Length: 388
Ligand SMILES: Cc1ncc(COP(=O)(O)O)c(C=O)c1O
Image (cartoon, rainbow, N blue to C red; front, side):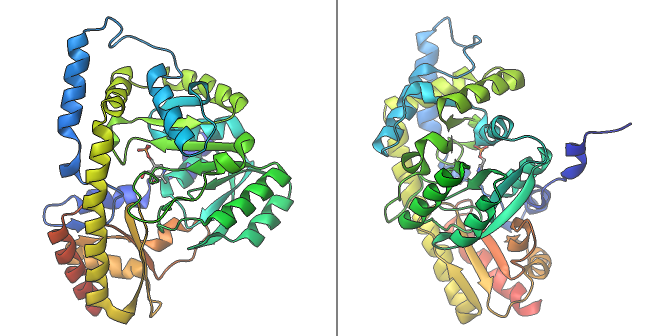
């Protein structure tokens, strides 16, 4: 029996496959993009749930409008306004994780075989999704300053690009943040050539130092879709994300969401809203950032101590990942296989490059492990490095 074209274009992602391997007892994993489970805001969640249950609102657990819980959309719009994004509740759709937001965005903006541009390297699950939509994928390389603007303009000049998918703040996998001047240039080009910008922003709230450059939604509001999520600052299992988009595009996404799952869980939307309005989320976020910056610093110093000049380490101002490259140019996929024997895991960078490259790079997650495990894991990695 035959399956769809999309089904044959995607395979299980490398990261998903190795996650199974890394969940074995004794393995220290820097591989997944996982938050620290010991820092999940259990007490605020319990309190918010108790408040809701006490209210015994008859609408609790009932079907609701596809666009999402209005007070939550209002609270999110307010957050966007603080970032100079001209948002109101009508511009926001609550989604089942930002992964669904991205899927709806593809359905709203492109047809099978249409051309899109992604950064190289980029987020693997987005690549999988674009392949499932049969997108023709073009790439632009990125540096710590942002995308290669000349290459981007050359691609936009082809006149066929539907959208540019970018993670401008604490990019996955590199942790890079696109500078403000470069964002202005990208926005101007997108406007000039009529290309949508799809700004994926799961990590923006995890800033440990420095200031965030303007979102594309302030630079090019009529042509930008922004994806947000509760996965990294509350918990991935809430499966709550949101999409901020110009009206016509948002309307299309709402229709597609209705076809897909009718709505995201209203109960969890109300829990999130309760945590936003009773201020426990803000307090939790501060605690999370204090813990994560310590973990980042522990990882960076351990890498410097063990590898010295042998490894180039990019230190991100936020997010969840350290991006590193072997100065001798050797293949980190081989290092990965040796590392697994020493019960430590990371993601070889090459898997994030849609058109090849990055063999000497690697992504190391610093949020999931304890500081003790980070120190031990880096020591194991060094051992593997000396043997591979
Ligand atoms: C760049 C990027 N976008 C989206 C997501 C998915 O987030 P969600 O759990 O909201 O679907 C992730 C998760 O790791 C991510 O790194």
